[in-house]
Image (cartoon, rainbow, N blue to C red; front, side):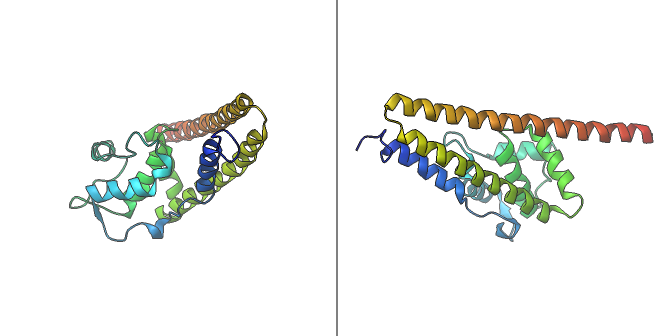
Length: 198
């Protein structure tokens, strides 16, 4: 079977990838372990649950990363060397978003979203939003992948797929820029309010 045919290896791999994005493993506050975990257990849990967001080459999270997040105040210190649901939820947000936003911005936004109702509902809202965005991107990509697969020439198929990847990257970058600007403006406004209260 030709790997570039619509039913070949490349297209099947792409469609399998799209399908995995359409229905990612459900992660919510209640699915986080109730018992606190040691560092090595945290690493295994995060790698399994968030494999979708990794590139397959680098670890999503390492012990030194977690220690640095604690030192920077981005996550609270462990209690008796154990990490709770709060730690796992904050690490999840960092692991999912660290390729898009600076980690202090992620920490600021997750703290801000958790203020009104608490961390569990804020975490669940973030995960639901991420899953909906993945499903929407997968649905749009599936149509374009199938259209590219219908092209007669192999080079035309590759160009269509390259254009799809570039378009998705441009959309992600536009969202990243806007998210950073919003966070910056929020932080700036809070800083100005603090200074006027002095």
